[in-house]
Picture 1 (cartoon, one colour):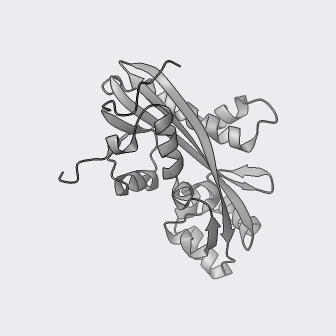
Picture 2 (cartoon, helix red, strand yellow):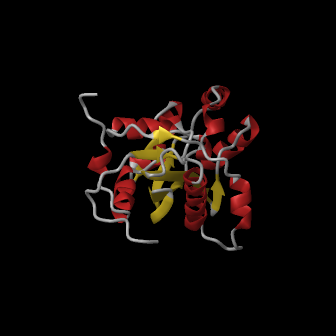
Picture 3 (cartoon, rainbow, N blue to C red):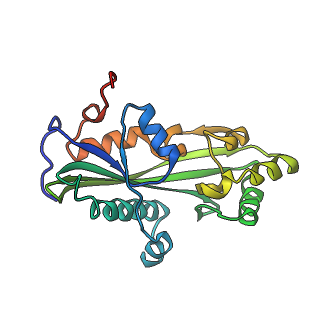
Length: 221
């Protein structure tokens, strides 16, 4: 990649390559009003194409990179000057990565494994810097946060699964929603568990020559 230039150059917008309302909420609370563009990446296909033995950390980074690249190729109206951020989260339990369960049956199986135990929520981040339609810089990494789960009662778990919330999120739980009742504590960055780690994102933005305060919206707006 070519040099992105010095921190301080004007940036048009931050483009979030995700449909996650939690990620959008984190960024908005942190002073950034991103443009949302959802990637069409087939996550299973990306994972399957990786070499055998690819580490869990490299898997989530590869997925984040694929999402960012897909969106970067489809935003000609913004690509003159922007940064695209792709993310992917998975829960590592007993050496196995777990994404969204999608069905009540799978969510119940996940919780049977997780309840009363600890697991690592791994979130991959990829930042692409675009100028004049070209990617001029890239930085990608992941964060890992240990989550200590409570043991919900059978009735609590039935009610939680019936809410539909755990079906749509990595690891079948949330920290900032109903699932937060069943998390005893975490070790690491809370924002990364919710979906996008602000400390890591700040460092990745710096890597591509963007200071995070450049992206803050005017508080008077």
